[in-house]
Length: 69
View 1 (cartoon, rainbow, N blue to C red):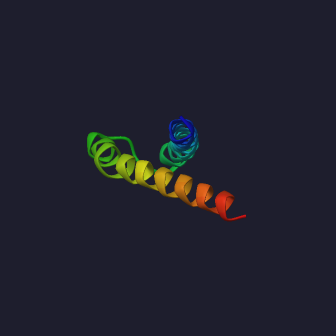
View 2: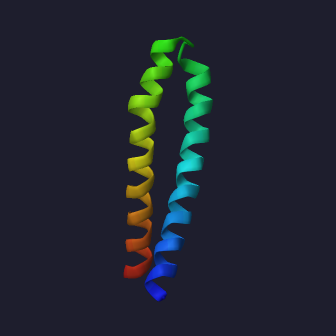
View 3: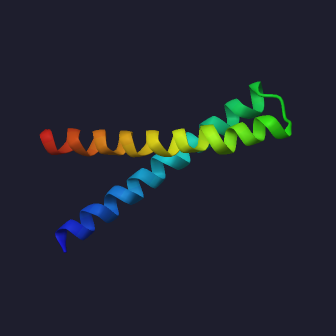
């Protein structure tokens, strides 16, 4: 049961990090990237998986830091 709660907290924390990264990327994307179908496709196929991977990496690093200290 403890392991299940840990994983649930980990996934919620990862989702929170992803949402923050997504909103920040959206602000930068609207400001600097021209709007057309190619940039939208690039965002969906390249940027979104990178944001997902980065959110899992940051979440893992945060949990390791809290466990070590």
